[in-house]
Amino acid sequence: MREISCWGSQLGMPRAHRHDDIEVNVVLDGQLDYLFGGRRVTIPAGATYVFWAALPHQVVATAEGSAAGWLTVPLDEVLRWRVPEPVITELLSGAPLLTPPRGADPTGHYGRALDPLGTVQRFADWRADLASADAQLEQIALLEMAAYLHRVLRVVRPVAESAESQSPTTLQTRSRAAAMATFIATHFRDPVSVGAVAASVHLTPHYAMQVFKEGVGMTIGGYLTQCRLAEAQRLLITTRLTVADVAHAAGFASSSRLYAAFTESGLPTPASCRQLQLQAAGWPMATT
Image (cartoon, rainbow, N blue to C red; front, side, top):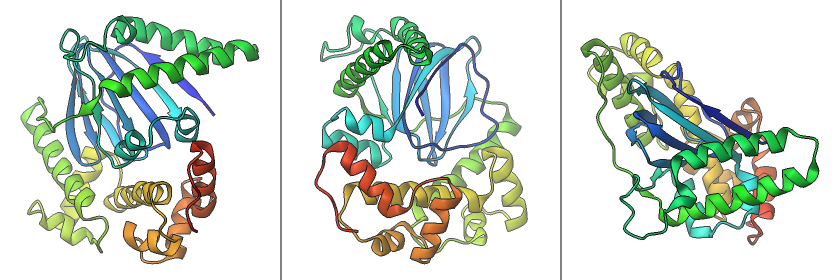
């Protein structure tokens, strides 16, 4: 259920993906360039990036010699850690959050507690503790992770989009794919056709599908469904809308299509998803 992983240098991910976790990326050296929910974001060395991974995301480039670590914690686990509701609401809104780089924290809260090198070393320790058969070590690791995440969320701020640095051919493909992903991320609540997505970047539908698949690693329809799924999950947790209203607000043609999308993604039913996550957070139950 819980996954803590570390890695050194990383090339681009071959496709966008999603998972129902809060994800923390810590960049030690170089930088990571992300395509996140239709946005291009650069994470510089010394910074920490926090986001809700239910939105489609993909590392599209790294600087030579880049090194980083990541932590992923299931959303229901994070909710049990009693993160302030406004912070969770901001994360679920799809806003990627970034800490100041080393030495650039005006609040003074960063300090050694969030030092990137020490943090990645702790990630490895926590991973070992959770993989052990020692229940006490596992509990200690979870308590330490909770405290760490609370510290990070005290200093993170929304991050702006940034341009990518790649070869002209790759840049053109990435730029077109990113522009189409942005169009989808902006219009997914409405009926969206492949033709409309293609027209947004002045391509034919057939060529647009090729460019999108090459740049993002999935189909236009698949990306559209993932955006709608993330929005439905957000609405289930943060509003009292009925499931039928959630389906409509997230862009699904019907409640049955919403249920089918949840099933195809391995999620519990929308009502169960809402109940489980609100119970984990200890928030008042919404109507279903």
